[in-house]
Image 1 (cartoon, rainbow over the protein chains, first blue to last red):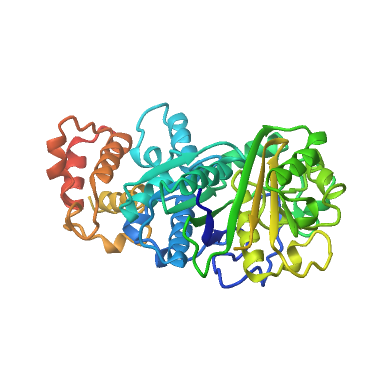
Image 2 (tube, chains in turn purple, red):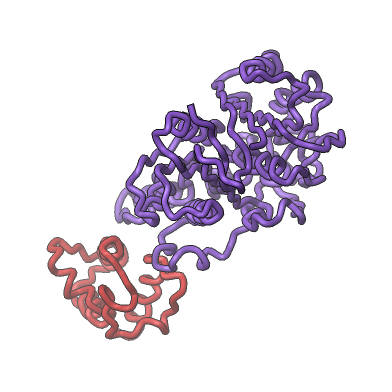
Length: 354
Length: 85
């Protein structure tokens, strides 16, 4: 079986991450219940005629995919695999509101066409004229990990050589209102610096797009090797540490071999216990890294964790804003990522230097 | 008639997401399809729905659309003659 490498990365989030020459050199501190992505100038990447029908999520996805391809030095890929939790939410809301407001009359085609979950993958393929495998995974907070696993299996078996993978989700006004009503979004505005220690229910929501070119051909510029990905739909809090250690054991590693653990804490007092279970026991002496206080929570926030892991392995540094504890780890070889949302769809991802 | 043309231009810009355009950019006799606006078949569907919703005009023969949607002038003339609201 062939090995799988991350050959390029790109990210659009509530931080200025689309400039990949930086690694969170400047951190934006947000104070709100929802935080929006810092957008690049879309006109620099998408012709106006094509962009006029694209909602924010599609634009973010298309631009992030272009940046990833650019960095990988590729004009074409063998497959495009996208993950999204909620799909093109804004157009879905627009279309559904139109049905209600106009009493099921006068339905226009644009928002309906653009509202499907696989719109981003389709738009990327149209632009690239890529007629290869194109798939979109919609599986809550495991949407992106499903794309990563699919790509990994194809690359290991040499069914493809270069695959564009990514995760994208956008905020929609109506859905945000609903998430506030059911307290999945915090009742109070919360500062990024305080989110992870807040003792209240819910979290701060965000949006973004993170894309990667994964390949079975290592380049001088490759970021990392993807060693393993494992997902669980359900997992009890008591079993998290045991499951993490088993995952490492399956990959012939012990906890001591992990130089950093990247966690998806989002400041929800009801569910951060899963992460605390790891940080207070097995990984208490491991460098802990958190990021959702900077970009908000969304179903495809976890690929930003992969973006961070890739950056750490390549630069051998961790920005202070990401450190949850301070151990002074000098070099980074193996990084473990763990993510879940509201106690469901857990994922473990293991990366190592290449 | 001039007010209708102005309204049409505003609606077209909003309905078709012509973000970079203003009313002044669309002349009354400019060819809408195949011209500088680069409108396509999806836009034609949007315009058909707009005629129905805003002016109560139902286009049953798609061939009619070709001449009606030629320019702002032809659209305004057709609407004035056939509108029910």
